[in-house]
Image (tube, rainbow over all chains, first blue to last red; front, side, top):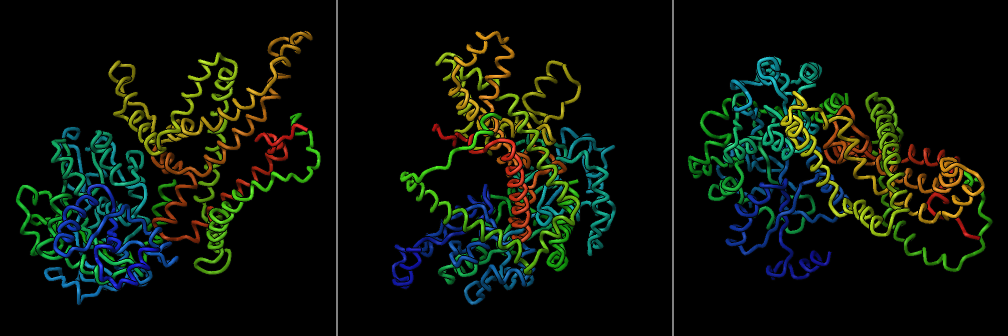
Length: 337
Length: 288
Protein backbone atom coordinates (compact mmCIF):
# COMPACT_ATOMS: atom_id res chain seq x y z
CA UNK A 1 0.00 0.00 0.00
CA UNK A 2 2.82 2.34 0.89
CA UNK A 3 4.50 1.44 -2.38
CA UNK A 4 1.58 2.41 -4.54
CA UNK A 5 1.05 5.68 -2.67
CA UNK A 6 4.70 6.46 -3.20
CA UNK A 7 4.35 5.80 -6.90
CA UNK A 8 1.47 8.22 -7.08
CA UNK A 9 3.37 11.03 -5.44
CA UNK A 10 6.54 10.51 -7.41
CA UNK A 11 4.57 10.08 -10.60
CA UNK A 12 6.88 7.32 -11.79
CA UNK A 13 9.77 9.74 -12.02
CA UNK A 14 12.16 7.71 -9.94
CA UNK A 15 11.94 4.28 -11.45
CA UNK A 16 14.67 2.90 -9.24
CA UNK A 17 12.46 3.29 -6.19
CA UNK A 18 9.30 1.87 -7.66
CA UNK A 19 7.90 -1.43 -6.63
CA UNK A 20 8.83 -3.91 -9.36
CA UNK A 21 6.16 -5.11 -11.77
CA UNK A 22 4.70 -8.46 -10.71
CA UNK A 23 4.32 -11.12 -13.38
CA UNK A 24 2.12 -14.02 -12.28
CA UNK A 25 2.95 -17.43 -13.73
CA UNK A 26 1.75 -20.97 -13.29
CA UNK A 27 4.83 -22.04 -11.33
CA UNK A 28 7.59 -24.58 -11.84
CA UNK A 29 9.63 -24.39 -15.02
CA UNK A 30 7.27 -21.75 -16.41
CA UNK A 31 8.27 -19.33 -13.67
CA UNK A 32 11.95 -19.76 -14.39
CA UNK A 33 11.35 -19.40 -18.13
CA UNK A 34 9.42 -16.18 -17.59
CA UNK A 35 12.13 -14.74 -15.40
CA UNK A 36 15.14 -15.80 -17.45
CA UNK A 37 13.59 -15.51 -20.90
CA UNK A 38 11.58 -12.34 -20.56
CA UNK A 39 11.96 -10.40 -17.32
CA UNK A 40 15.74 -10.20 -17.11
CA UNK A 41 16.19 -9.04 -20.75
CA UNK A 42 13.27 -6.63 -20.27
CA UNK A 43 14.85 -5.05 -17.21
CA UNK A 44 18.16 -4.85 -19.03
CA UNK A 45 16.58 -3.05 -21.96
CA UNK A 46 14.16 -0.73 -20.14
CA UNK A 47 15.47 -0.44 -16.60
CA UNK A 48 12.03 -1.46 -15.31
CA UNK A 49 12.29 -4.06 -12.57
CA UNK A 50 9.96 -7.06 -12.71
CA UNK A 51 9.52 -10.14 -10.53
CA UNK A 52 7.54 -13.37 -10.82
CA UNK A 53 4.94 -14.77 -8.51
CA UNK A 54 3.28 -18.17 -8.66
CA UNK A 55 0.89 -19.81 -9.03
CA UNK A 56 -1.75 -17.80 -10.85
CA UNK A 57 -4.79 -18.45 -8.74
CA UNK A 58 -7.82 -16.74 -10.27
CA UNK A 59 -9.61 -16.91 -6.93
CA UNK A 60 -6.80 -14.78 -5.52
CA UNK A 61 -7.08 -12.39 -8.46
CA UNK A 62 -10.80 -12.11 -7.87
CA UNK A 63 -10.35 -11.25 -4.20
CA UNK A 64 -7.66 -8.68 -5.07
CA UNK A 65 -9.86 -7.03 -7.67
CA UNK A 66 -12.86 -6.99 -5.33
CA UNK A 67 -10.78 -5.50 -2.53
CA UNK A 68 -9.20 -2.93 -4.86
CA UNK A 69 -5.74 -4.15 -3.85
CA UNK A 70 -4.32 -5.64 -7.01
CA UNK A 71 -0.64 -6.50 -6.57
CA UNK A 72 -0.17 -8.35 -9.86
CA UNK A 73 0.54 -6.51 -13.09
CA UNK A 74 0.92 -9.03 -15.88
CA UNK A 75 -0.39 -12.57 -15.84
CA UNK A 76 -1.07 -15.58 -18.03
CA UNK A 77 -4.74 -15.94 -18.90
CA UNK A 78 -6.32 -19.13 -20.19
CA UNK A 79 -7.82 -18.98 -23.65
CA UNK A 80 -11.24 -19.87 -22.28
CA UNK A 81 -11.21 -16.93 -19.90
CA UNK A 82 -10.01 -14.61 -22.66
CA UNK A 83 -12.77 -15.98 -24.88
CA UNK A 84 -15.40 -15.27 -22.24
CA UNK A 85 -15.34 -11.48 -22.45
CA UNK A 86 -18.28 -11.07 -20.11
CA UNK A 87 -16.21 -12.61 -17.33
CA UNK A 88 -12.83 -11.35 -18.52
CA UNK A 89 -13.84 -7.69 -18.27
CA UNK A 90 -14.22 -8.12 -14.51
CA UNK A 91 -10.62 -9.19 -14.06
CA UNK A 92 -8.48 -7.71 -16.83
CA UNK A 93 -7.72 -4.37 -18.44
CA UNK A 94 -8.49 -4.14 -22.16
CA UNK A 95 -5.23 -4.55 -24.06
CA UNK A 96 -3.73 -1.23 -25.12
CA UNK A 97 -2.71 -2.06 -28.68
CA UNK A 98 -1.02 1.30 -29.05
CA UNK A 99 1.67 -0.05 -26.70
CA UNK A 100 1.47 -3.76 -27.52
CA UNK A 101 2.41 -3.79 -31.19
CA UNK A 102 1.88 -7.55 -31.52
CA UNK A 103 3.53 -7.74 -34.93
CA UNK A 104 3.71 -11.36 -36.01
CA UNK A 105 0.89 -12.38 -33.67
CA UNK A 106 -1.96 -13.86 -35.72
CA UNK A 107 -4.98 -11.59 -35.91
CA UNK A 108 -7.29 -14.07 -34.12
CA UNK A 109 -4.95 -14.18 -31.12
CA UNK A 110 -5.09 -10.44 -30.51
CA UNK A 111 -8.05 -10.45 -28.20
CA UNK A 112 -9.67 -7.68 -26.28
CA UNK A 113 -8.37 -8.74 -22.86
CA UNK A 114 -5.27 -10.70 -23.81
CA UNK A 115 -2.56 -11.22 -26.40
CA UNK A 116 -1.63 -14.75 -27.46
CA UNK A 117 1.88 -15.51 -26.14
CA UNK A 118 2.57 -19.22 -25.86
CA UNK A 119 1.39 -22.27 -27.74
CA UNK A 120 1.20 -25.64 -26.07
CA UNK A 121 -0.60 -28.92 -26.52
CA UNK A 122 -2.30 -31.65 -24.59
CA UNK A 123 -0.87 -34.86 -25.95
CA UNK A 124 -0.99 -38.60 -25.46
CA UNK A 125 2.23 -39.27 -23.57
CA UNK A 126 3.27 -42.89 -23.28
CA UNK A 127 5.94 -45.19 -21.98
CA UNK A 128 7.50 -47.05 -24.92
CA UNK A 129 9.26 -49.53 -22.68
CA UNK A 130 6.16 -50.74 -20.89
CA UNK A 131 3.98 -50.77 -24.02
CA UNK A 132 4.57 -53.35 -26.75
CA UNK A 133 3.46 -51.03 -29.52
CA UNK A 134 3.02 -47.32 -30.02
CA UNK A 135 -0.45 -45.89 -29.37
CA UNK A 136 -1.54 -43.98 -32.48
CA UNK A 137 -4.57 -42.04 -31.30
CA UNK A 138 -6.93 -41.45 -28.40
CA UNK A 139 -8.82 -44.56 -29.52
CA UNK A 140 -5.75 -46.54 -28.45
CA UNK A 141 -5.78 -44.70 -25.12
CA UNK A 142 -9.18 -46.27 -24.49
CA UNK A 143 -8.16 -49.71 -25.73
CA UNK A 144 -7.13 -51.44 -22.51
CA UNK A 145 -6.95 -54.86 -24.20
CA UNK A 146 -4.23 -53.96 -26.67
CA UNK A 147 -2.58 -51.44 -24.37
CA UNK A 148 -2.83 -52.82 -20.83
CA UNK A 149 -1.79 -50.60 -17.96
CA UNK A 150 -2.94 -47.55 -16.09
CA UNK A 151 -3.50 -44.11 -17.61
CA UNK A 152 -3.01 -40.76 -15.93
CA UNK A 153 -6.01 -38.48 -16.30
CA UNK A 154 -7.00 -35.12 -14.85
CA UNK A 155 -8.75 -35.19 -11.47
CA UNK A 156 -10.30 -31.76 -12.14
CA UNK A 157 -9.78 -28.76 -14.43
CA UNK A 158 -11.79 -29.93 -17.39
CA UNK A 159 -10.81 -26.71 -19.19
CA UNK A 160 -7.07 -27.31 -18.91
CA UNK A 161 -6.80 -30.97 -19.94
CA UNK A 162 -9.85 -31.39 -22.22
CA UNK A 163 -10.79 -34.89 -20.99
CA UNK A 164 -14.20 -34.64 -22.64
CA UNK A 165 -12.80 -33.94 -26.12
CA UNK A 166 -10.30 -36.74 -25.61
CA UNK A 167 -13.01 -39.21 -24.60
CA UNK A 168 -15.08 -38.31 -27.66
CA UNK A 169 -12.10 -38.72 -29.99
CA UNK A 170 -11.46 -42.01 -28.24
CA UNK A 171 -15.02 -42.97 -29.10
CA UNK A 172 -14.40 -42.25 -32.78
CA UNK A 173 -15.78 -38.71 -33.11
CA UNK A 174 -13.90 -36.83 -35.83
CA UNK A 175 -11.87 -33.90 -34.47
CA UNK A 176 -13.82 -31.39 -36.56
CA UNK A 177 -17.17 -32.72 -35.33
CA UNK A 178 -16.48 -32.50 -31.60
CA UNK A 179 -18.59 -29.41 -30.89
CA UNK A 180 -21.04 -29.02 -29.39
CA UNK A 181 -19.61 -31.61 -27.01
CA UNK A 182 -21.84 -34.57 -26.27
CA UNK A 183 -21.02 -34.71 -22.56
CA UNK A 184 -23.13 -37.80 -21.89
CA UNK A 185 -21.34 -39.73 -24.60
CA UNK A 186 -17.93 -38.57 -23.35
CA UNK A 187 -18.67 -39.67 -19.78
CA UNK A 188 -20.08 -43.00 -20.97
CA UNK A 189 -16.84 -43.59 -22.85
CA UNK A 190 -14.80 -42.69 -19.78
CA UNK A 191 -16.83 -45.18 -17.75
CA UNK A 192 -15.42 -47.97 -19.90
CA UNK A 193 -11.87 -47.44 -18.60
CA UNK A 194 -12.58 -45.87 -15.23
CA UNK A 195 -10.75 -48.58 -13.27
CA UNK A 196 -7.65 -48.07 -15.41
CA UNK A 197 -7.45 -44.34 -14.76
CA UNK A 198 -5.21 -42.71 -12.16
CA UNK A 199 -6.34 -39.16 -11.46
CA UNK A 200 -3.82 -36.40 -10.95
CA UNK A 201 -4.38 -33.01 -9.38
CA UNK A 202 -1.78 -31.03 -11.29
CA UNK A 203 0.56 -31.41 -14.24
CA UNK A 204 3.52 -32.10 -11.96
CA UNK A 205 1.74 -35.06 -10.46
CA UNK A 206 0.86 -36.33 -13.94
CA UNK A 207 4.49 -35.99 -14.94
CA UNK A 208 5.58 -37.88 -11.83
CA UNK A 209 3.21 -40.74 -12.61
CA UNK A 210 4.81 -41.13 -16.05
CA UNK A 211 8.30 -40.75 -14.63
CA UNK A 212 7.80 -43.42 -11.97
CA UNK A 213 6.25 -45.86 -14.42
CA UNK A 214 2.99 -45.80 -12.45
CA UNK A 215 1.09 -45.31 -15.72
CA UNK A 216 1.74 -46.34 -19.31
CA UNK A 217 -0.11 -43.40 -20.87
CA UNK A 218 -1.25 -39.93 -19.88
CA UNK A 219 -3.32 -36.97 -21.01
CA UNK A 220 -0.66 -34.37 -20.34
CA UNK A 221 1.14 -31.25 -21.59
CA UNK A 222 3.66 -31.77 -24.38
CA UNK A 223 6.25 -29.87 -22.34
CA UNK A 224 6.17 -32.57 -19.65
CA UNK A 225 6.63 -35.52 -22.02
CA UNK A 226 9.31 -33.56 -23.89
CA UNK A 227 11.27 -32.89 -20.70
CA UNK A 228 11.03 -36.55 -19.66
CA UNK A 229 12.26 -37.68 -23.08
CA UNK A 230 15.14 -35.21 -22.93
CA UNK A 231 16.08 -36.66 -19.57
CA UNK A 232 16.55 -40.01 -21.30
CA UNK A 233 13.43 -41.66 -19.92
CA UNK A 234 11.39 -43.98 -22.19
CA UNK A 235 8.57 -41.45 -22.44
CA UNK A 236 7.35 -40.44 -25.91
CA UNK A 237 4.80 -38.05 -27.33
CA UNK A 238 2.01 -38.96 -29.75
CA UNK A 239 1.21 -35.75 -31.61
CA UNK A 240 -1.70 -37.16 -33.58
CA UNK A 241 -4.93 -35.54 -32.30
CA UNK A 242 -3.06 -33.22 -29.95
CA UNK A 243 -5.26 -30.53 -28.45
CA UNK A 244 -3.73 -27.13 -29.19
CA UNK A 245 -3.95 -24.42 -26.58
CA UNK A 246 -2.82 -20.82 -26.53
CA UNK A 247 -1.93 -19.02 -23.31
CA UNK A 248 -2.53 -15.28 -23.34
CA UNK A 249 -0.91 -12.41 -21.52
CA UNK A 250 -3.01 -9.68 -19.98
CA UNK A 251 -2.97 -7.02 -17.31
CA UNK A 252 -4.87 -7.44 -14.05
CA UNK A 253 -7.76 -5.05 -13.66
CA UNK A 254 -6.81 -2.06 -11.56
CA UNK A 255 -3.11 -2.95 -11.64
CA UNK A 256 -0.69 -0.13 -10.94
CA UNK A 257 1.32 1.23 -13.89
CA UNK A 258 -0.73 -0.26 -16.72
CA UNK A 259 1.51 1.36 -19.34
CA UNK A 260 4.64 -0.33 -18.03
CA UNK A 261 2.68 -3.56 -17.75
CA UNK A 262 1.66 -3.40 -21.41
CA UNK A 263 5.23 -2.50 -22.32
CA UNK A 264 6.30 -5.76 -20.70
CA UNK A 265 3.72 -7.68 -22.72
CA UNK A 266 4.82 -5.91 -25.89
CA UNK A 267 8.35 -7.08 -25.12
CA UNK A 268 7.35 -10.68 -24.37
CA UNK A 269 5.35 -11.27 -27.55
CA UNK A 270 7.75 -9.50 -29.91
CA UNK A 271 9.62 -11.50 -32.54
CA UNK A 272 12.96 -10.84 -30.82
CA UNK A 273 11.82 -12.10 -27.41
CA UNK A 274 8.81 -14.39 -27.69
CA UNK A 275 11.01 -17.48 -28.25
CA UNK A 276 13.36 -16.71 -25.35
CA UNK A 277 10.88 -18.30 -22.95
CA UNK A 278 11.06 -21.51 -24.99
CA UNK A 279 14.75 -21.91 -24.24
CA UNK A 280 13.84 -22.62 -20.61
CA UNK A 281 10.46 -24.32 -20.95
CA UNK A 282 9.36 -25.95 -24.21
CA UNK A 283 6.13 -24.02 -24.78
CA UNK A 284 6.27 -22.56 -28.26
CA UNK A 285 6.21 -18.88 -29.14
CA UNK A 286 3.00 -17.73 -30.76
CA UNK A 287 4.85 -15.09 -32.77
CA UNK A 288 5.53 -16.66 -36.16
CA UNK A 289 8.65 -14.57 -36.72
CA UNK A 290 10.03 -15.75 -33.40
CA UNK A 291 9.61 -19.50 -33.84
CA UNK A 292 12.24 -19.58 -36.61
CA UNK A 293 14.91 -18.55 -34.17
CA UNK A 294 14.70 -21.75 -32.17
CA UNK A 295 17.46 -24.31 -32.81
CA UNK A 296 16.41 -27.62 -34.37
CA UNK A 297 17.29 -29.84 -31.41
CA UNK A 298 14.83 -27.88 -29.27
CA UNK A 299 12.27 -27.21 -32.00
CA UNK A 300 11.47 -30.88 -32.47
CA UNK A 301 9.82 -30.96 -29.04
CA UNK A 302 7.47 -28.10 -29.86
CA UNK A 303 3.84 -28.21 -30.99
CA UNK A 304 4.60 -25.80 -33.83
CA UNK A 305 7.15 -28.17 -35.38
CA UNK A 306 6.39 -29.71 -38.77
CA UNK A 307 2.70 -30.30 -39.38
CA UNK A 308 1.74 -30.75 -35.73
CA UNK A 309 -0.55 -27.77 -35.64
CA UNK A 310 -2.40 -29.17 -38.66
CA UNK A 311 -2.87 -32.47 -36.78
CA UNK A 312 -4.13 -30.53 -33.80
CA UNK A 313 -7.63 -30.13 -32.51
CA UNK A 314 -8.57 -26.56 -31.61
CA UNK A 315 -11.02 -26.23 -28.72
CA UNK A 316 -14.11 -24.21 -29.61
CA UNK A 317 -13.76 -21.23 -27.31
CA UNK A 318 -17.29 -20.01 -27.90
CA UNK A 319 -18.67 -23.33 -26.79
CA UNK A 320 -16.41 -23.27 -23.76
CA UNK A 321 -17.30 -19.70 -22.85
CA UNK A 322 -20.93 -20.67 -22.43
CA UNK A 323 -20.51 -24.23 -21.19
CA UNK A 324 -17.52 -24.18 -18.85
CA UNK A 325 -19.59 -24.33 -15.70
CA UNK A 326 -21.84 -27.12 -16.95
CA UNK A 327 -18.96 -29.17 -18.38
CA UNK A 328 -16.91 -28.73 -15.23
CA UNK A 329 -19.81 -29.70 -13.03
CA UNK A 330 -20.66 -32.77 -15.07
CA UNK A 331 -17.05 -33.96 -15.14
CA UNK A 332 -16.64 -33.38 -11.44
CA UNK A 333 -19.79 -35.30 -10.70
CA UNK A 334 -18.57 -38.13 -12.89
CA UNK A 335 -15.28 -38.16 -10.97
CA UNK A 336 -17.14 -38.29 -7.68
CA UNK A 337 -18.84 -41.44 -8.90
CA UNK B 1 -18.96 -39.50 32.21
CA UNK B 2 -18.56 -38.54 35.83
CA UNK B 3 -16.87 -35.38 34.70
CA UNK B 4 -19.79 -34.51 32.49
CA UNK B 5 -22.35 -34.77 35.24
CA UNK B 6 -20.69 -32.24 37.42
CA UNK B 7 -21.80 -28.72 36.70
CA UNK B 8 -19.29 -25.98 37.26
CA UNK B 9 -20.49 -23.55 39.90
CA UNK B 10 -21.50 -20.13 38.57
CA UNK B 11 -18.30 -18.21 38.10
CA UNK B 12 -17.64 -14.97 39.79
CA UNK B 13 -16.16 -12.18 37.74
CA UNK B 14 -12.55 -12.91 37.00
CA UNK B 15 -10.50 -9.80 36.49
CA UNK B 16 -7.84 -11.75 34.61
CA UNK B 17 -10.48 -12.47 31.97
CA UNK B 18 -9.54 -9.17 30.33
CA UNK B 19 -6.35 -10.77 29.11
CA UNK B 20 -8.41 -12.77 26.67
CA UNK B 21 -9.53 -9.58 24.92
CA UNK B 22 -6.64 -9.19 22.43
CA UNK B 23 -7.10 -12.75 21.23
CA UNK B 24 -10.84 -12.25 20.92
CA UNK B 25 -10.38 -9.03 18.99
CA UNK B 26 -7.88 -10.69 16.71
CA UNK B 27 -10.27 -13.56 16.03
CA UNK B 28 -13.17 -11.19 15.45
CA UNK B 29 -11.29 -9.09 12.90
CA UNK B 30 -9.30 -11.75 11.11
CA UNK B 31 -11.55 -14.76 11.41
CA UNK B 32 -15.16 -14.05 12.31
CA UNK B 33 -15.62 -11.10 9.97
CA UNK B 34 -14.10 -12.79 6.86
CA UNK B 35 -16.10 -15.91 7.69
CA UNK B 36 -19.26 -13.82 7.85
CA UNK B 37 -18.36 -12.15 4.54
CA UNK B 38 -17.79 -15.51 2.90
CA UNK B 39 -20.92 -17.11 4.26
CA UNK B 40 -22.92 -14.07 3.25
CA UNK B 41 -22.03 -14.88 -0.33
CA UNK B 42 -23.71 -18.24 -0.12
CA UNK B 43 -27.02 -16.37 0.05
CA UNK B 44 -26.19 -13.51 -2.30
CA UNK B 45 -24.21 -14.99 -5.21
CA UNK B 46 -25.19 -15.05 -7.99
CA UNK B 47 -28.63 -13.93 -6.71
CA UNK B 48 -30.13 -13.30 -3.32
CA UNK B 49 -31.78 -16.44 -2.01
CA UNK B 50 -31.25 -20.04 -1.10
CA UNK B 51 -30.40 -21.20 -4.63
CA UNK B 52 -26.93 -22.50 -3.68
CA UNK B 53 -28.19 -24.55 -0.77
CA UNK B 54 -31.06 -25.89 -2.82
CA UNK B 55 -28.63 -26.80 -5.61
CA UNK B 56 -26.36 -28.55 -3.13
CA UNK B 57 -29.04 -30.76 -1.64
CA UNK B 58 -30.60 -31.24 -5.06
CA UNK B 59 -27.37 -32.75 -6.38
CA UNK B 60 -27.03 -36.38 -5.42
CA UNK B 61 -23.27 -36.56 -5.61
CA UNK B 62 -22.75 -33.54 -3.35
CA UNK B 63 -24.92 -35.07 -0.67
CA UNK B 64 -23.03 -38.31 -1.14
CA UNK B 65 -19.72 -36.46 -0.77
CA UNK B 66 -20.98 -34.85 2.44
CA UNK B 67 -21.95 -38.23 3.87
CA UNK B 68 -18.68 -39.69 2.67
CA UNK B 69 -16.80 -36.85 4.38
CA UNK B 70 -18.51 -37.63 7.67
CA UNK B 71 -17.97 -41.36 7.26
CA UNK B 72 -14.25 -41.02 6.52
CA UNK B 73 -13.80 -38.54 9.37
CA UNK B 74 -15.44 -40.95 11.84
CA UNK B 75 -13.30 -43.77 10.54
CA UNK B 76 -10.10 -41.76 10.90
CA UNK B 77 -11.09 -40.61 14.39
CA UNK B 78 -11.77 -44.19 15.46
CA UNK B 79 -8.47 -45.48 14.09
CA UNK B 80 -6.51 -42.63 15.65
CA UNK B 81 -8.20 -43.36 18.97
CA UNK B 82 -7.34 -47.04 18.77
CA UNK B 83 -3.66 -46.34 18.10
CA UNK B 84 -3.27 -43.27 20.25
CA UNK B 85 -4.71 -44.56 23.52
CA UNK B 86 -2.14 -47.29 24.22
CA UNK B 87 0.60 -45.05 22.84
CA UNK B 88 -0.32 -42.23 25.18
CA UNK B 89 -0.66 -44.70 28.06
CA UNK B 90 2.85 -46.00 27.57
CA UNK B 91 4.13 -42.45 27.15
CA UNK B 92 2.48 -41.34 30.38
CA UNK B 93 3.77 -44.21 32.46
CA UNK B 94 7.15 -44.97 30.93
CA UNK B 95 10.48 -43.71 32.20
CA UNK B 96 11.27 -40.09 31.38
CA UNK B 97 13.70 -41.15 28.69
CA UNK B 98 11.29 -43.45 26.88
CA UNK B 99 8.53 -40.90 27.25
CA UNK B 100 10.78 -38.28 25.70
CA UNK B 101 11.59 -40.45 22.72
CA UNK B 102 7.93 -41.31 22.22
CA UNK B 103 6.98 -37.63 22.46
CA UNK B 104 9.54 -36.65 19.84
CA UNK B 105 8.26 -39.41 17.56
CA UNK B 106 4.81 -37.81 17.77
CA UNK B 107 6.05 -34.28 17.25
CA UNK B 108 8.50 -34.80 14.40
CA UNK B 109 5.80 -35.01 11.72
CA UNK B 110 4.62 -31.54 12.86
CA UNK B 111 7.89 -30.08 11.64
CA UNK B 112 7.42 -30.90 7.98
CA UNK B 113 4.70 -29.69 5.65
CA UNK B 114 1.55 -31.72 5.12
CA UNK B 115 2.17 -31.61 1.38
CA UNK B 116 5.60 -33.17 1.72
CA UNK B 117 4.32 -35.89 4.02
CA UNK B 118 1.39 -36.60 1.72
CA UNK B 119 3.56 -37.00 -1.37
CA UNK B 120 6.01 -39.07 0.65
CA UNK B 121 3.18 -41.49 1.38
CA UNK B 122 2.33 -41.60 -2.33
CA UNK B 123 5.94 -42.54 -3.07
CA UNK B 124 5.88 -45.27 -0.44
CA UNK B 125 2.48 -46.72 -1.29
CA UNK B 126 2.18 -46.50 -5.07
CA UNK B 127 2.46 -49.48 -7.44
CA UNK B 128 6.13 -48.84 -8.11
CA UNK B 129 6.66 -47.59 -4.56
CA UNK B 130 8.77 -48.82 -1.70
CA UNK B 131 6.36 -51.34 -0.23
CA UNK B 132 5.24 -52.86 -3.51
CA UNK B 133 8.79 -53.05 -4.90
CA UNK B 134 9.81 -54.90 -1.77
CA UNK B 135 6.86 -57.30 -1.85
CA UNK B 136 7.30 -57.95 -5.58
CA UNK B 137 11.05 -58.36 -5.18
CA UNK B 138 10.62 -60.92 -2.41
CA UNK B 139 8.04 -62.73 -4.52
CA UNK B 140 5.38 -62.33 -1.84
CA UNK B 141 2.87 -60.93 -4.33
CA UNK B 142 2.50 -61.30 -8.10
CA UNK B 143 0.80 -57.97 -8.67
CA UNK B 144 1.30 -54.74 -6.79
CA UNK B 145 -1.18 -54.22 -3.97
CA UNK B 146 -3.52 -51.24 -4.29
CA UNK B 147 -2.39 -49.23 -1.32
CA UNK B 148 -3.00 -45.73 -2.58
CA UNK B 149 -5.46 -43.66 -4.65
CA UNK B 150 -8.26 -45.34 -2.79
CA UNK B 151 -9.84 -45.16 0.66
CA UNK B 152 -6.92 -47.01 2.22
CA UNK B 153 -4.46 -44.38 0.98
CA UNK B 154 -6.57 -41.55 2.36
CA UNK B 155 -6.91 -43.27 5.72
CA UNK B 156 -3.21 -44.06 6.04
CA UNK B 157 -2.19 -40.50 5.18
CA UNK B 158 -4.80 -38.80 7.34
CA UNK B 159 -4.24 -41.03 10.38
CA UNK B 160 -0.54 -40.26 10.18
CA UNK B 161 -1.13 -36.53 9.91
CA UNK B 162 -3.78 -36.30 12.63
CA UNK B 163 -2.33 -38.74 15.16
CA UNK B 164 -0.55 -36.06 17.25
CA UNK B 165 -3.88 -34.31 17.79
CA UNK B 166 -5.17 -37.47 19.42
CA UNK B 167 -2.05 -38.54 21.33
CA UNK B 168 -1.26 -35.22 22.98
CA UNK B 169 -4.63 -34.48 24.67
CA UNK B 170 -4.90 -38.07 25.91
CA UNK B 171 -1.35 -37.93 27.19
CA UNK B 172 -1.97 -34.62 28.96
CA UNK B 173 -5.00 -36.02 30.78
CA UNK B 174 -3.26 -39.29 31.66
CA UNK B 175 -0.33 -37.42 33.15
CA UNK B 176 -2.77 -35.75 35.53
CA UNK B 177 -4.38 -38.97 36.75
CA UNK B 178 -3.42 -39.87 40.29
CA UNK B 179 -2.12 -43.44 39.98
CA UNK B 180 -2.79 -43.95 43.68
CA UNK B 181 -6.47 -44.22 42.76
CA UNK B 182 -5.73 -47.34 40.71
CA UNK B 183 -3.63 -48.74 43.52
CA UNK B 184 -6.45 -48.00 45.96
CA UNK B 185 -8.86 -49.90 43.72
CA UNK B 186 -6.49 -52.87 43.67
CA UNK B 187 -6.14 -52.61 47.42
CA UNK B 188 -9.89 -52.82 47.75
CA UNK B 189 -9.89 -56.11 45.83
CA UNK B 190 -10.35 -55.02 42.26
CA UNK B 191 -8.65 -57.02 39.49
CA UNK B 192 -6.15 -55.01 37.38
CA UNK B 193 -8.56 -55.06 34.42
CA UNK B 194 -11.44 -53.88 36.58
CA UNK B 195 -9.34 -51.18 38.15
CA UNK B 196 -8.46 -49.92 34.71
CA UNK B 197 -12.00 -50.14 33.42
CA UNK B 198 -13.72 -48.57 36.40
CA UNK B 199 -11.11 -46.09 37.59
CA UNK B 200 -8.43 -45.27 35.03
CA UNK B 201 -10.49 -45.33 31.85
CA UNK B 202 -13.24 -42.96 33.05
CA UNK B 203 -10.60 -40.52 34.31
CA UNK B 204 -8.80 -40.58 30.95
CA UNK B 205 -11.94 -40.12 28.86
CA UNK B 206 -11.87 -36.31 28.77
CA UNK B 207 -8.57 -36.59 26.87
CA UNK B 208 -10.07 -39.09 24.46
CA UNK B 209 -13.01 -36.78 23.81
CA UNK B 210 -10.79 -33.77 23.29
CA UNK B 211 -8.54 -35.66 20.89
CA UNK B 212 -11.51 -37.10 19.04
CA UNK B 213 -13.10 -33.70 18.55
CA UNK B 214 -9.87 -32.23 17.23
CA UNK B 215 -9.22 -35.10 14.86
CA UNK B 216 -12.79 -35.27 13.67
CA UNK B 217 -13.10 -31.57 12.96
CA UNK B 218 -9.70 -31.41 11.27
CA UNK B 219 -10.50 -34.35 9.02
CA UNK B 220 -13.82 -32.83 8.00
CA UNK B 221 -12.03 -29.89 6.45
CA UNK B 222 -9.06 -31.66 4.90
CA UNK B 223 -8.53 -31.73 1.17
CA UNK B 224 -4.86 -32.06 0.19
CA UNK B 225 -4.41 -35.55 1.56
CA UNK B 226 -7.58 -37.11 0.14
CA UNK B 227 -6.88 -35.37 -3.18
CA UNK B 228 -3.43 -36.90 -3.50
CA UNK B 229 -3.82 -40.25 -1.73
CA UNK B 230 -7.49 -40.91 -2.38
CA UNK B 231 -9.64 -41.60 -5.40
CA UNK B 232 -12.12 -39.01 -6.68
CA UNK B 233 -15.00 -41.39 -6.00
CA UNK B 234 -14.04 -41.16 -2.32
CA UNK B 235 -13.67 -37.39 -2.41
CA UNK B 236 -14.25 -35.23 0.64
CA UNK B 237 -16.17 -31.97 0.72
CA UNK B 238 -13.01 -29.87 1.04
CA UNK B 239 -11.92 -31.00 -2.43
CA UNK B 240 -15.25 -30.06 -3.95
CA UNK B 241 -15.12 -26.63 -2.29
CA UNK B 242 -11.66 -25.99 -3.76
CA UNK B 243 -12.97 -26.69 -7.26
CA UNK B 244 -15.85 -24.27 -6.78
CA UNK B 245 -13.72 -21.48 -5.33
CA UNK B 246 -10.50 -21.78 -7.34
CA UNK B 247 -11.45 -23.32 -10.61
CA UNK B 248 -15.00 -22.14 -11.27
CA UNK B 249 -14.78 -18.88 -9.26
CA UNK B 250 -18.21 -19.90 -8.06
CA UNK B 251 -17.81 -18.46 -4.59
CA UNK B 252 -21.50 -18.55 -3.81
CA UNK B 253 -21.62 -22.32 -4.17
CA UNK B 254 -18.26 -22.78 -2.47
CA UNK B 255 -19.44 -20.69 0.46
CA UNK B 256 -22.72 -22.60 0.65
CA UNK B 257 -20.77 -25.86 0.86
CA UNK B 258 -18.53 -24.41 3.55
CA UNK B 259 -21.57 -23.24 5.48
CA UNK B 260 -23.22 -26.64 5.26
CA UNK B 261 -20.03 -28.29 6.47
CA UNK B 262 -19.80 -25.79 9.32
CA UNK B 263 -23.41 -26.38 10.37
CA UNK B 264 -23.01 -30.14 10.26
CA UNK B 265 -19.85 -29.82 12.35
CA UNK B 266 -21.59 -27.61 14.90
CA UNK B 267 -24.50 -30.04 15.03
CA UNK B 268 -22.16 -32.92 15.75
CA UNK B 269 -20.37 -30.85 18.40
CA UNK B 270 -23.74 -30.04 19.97
CA UNK B 271 -24.66 -33.71 20.10
CA UNK B 272 -21.22 -34.55 21.48
CA UNK B 273 -21.71 -31.75 24.01
CA UNK B 274 -24.83 -33.45 25.35
CA UNK B 275 -22.85 -36.60 26.01
CA UNK B 276 -19.69 -35.04 27.38
CA UNK B 277 -18.87 -31.65 28.76
CA UNK B 278 -16.69 -30.17 26.06
CA UNK B 279 -15.26 -27.65 28.49
CA UNK B 280 -14.03 -30.51 30.66
CA UNK B 281 -12.56 -32.28 27.69
CA UNK B 282 -10.37 -29.30 26.97
CA UNK B 283 -9.35 -28.87 30.58
CA UNK B 284 -11.81 -26.08 31.32
CA UNK B 285 -12.90 -27.70 34.55
CA UNK B 286 -12.39 -25.44 37.53
CA UNK B 287 -10.52 -26.94 40.41
CA UNK B 288 -12.85 -25.21 42.89
